[in-house]
Length: 136
Image (cartoon, rainbow, N blue to C red):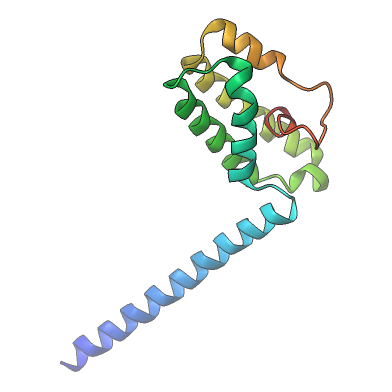
């Protein structure tokens, strides 16, 4: 009986410790995103607000495009801090995930919609333009 109680106590302690560590990692990730002003949900909503009408997305396309954009932004949030600390690494990683986004969108959008999407790229990285978060 003592062995069962001891084993349960050890298991409980290990579980609490691992949950606490995971919580810290998630908190740090959220903090980095918040510091950088990078809120995935609000950015995704803003981007979809622009893409929907600009690309004339159908009801079937909207959730698929939204999912692809949200996934892209979640990936970008993991290294957004590199934009200022290590611009070369940021550019390389951003380019890689953007290519992934483009390939996903190619399977969702029609050819003319894809051309319009690529034409929406702002000339410069303007923080006031939500689409900048997609292209830069």
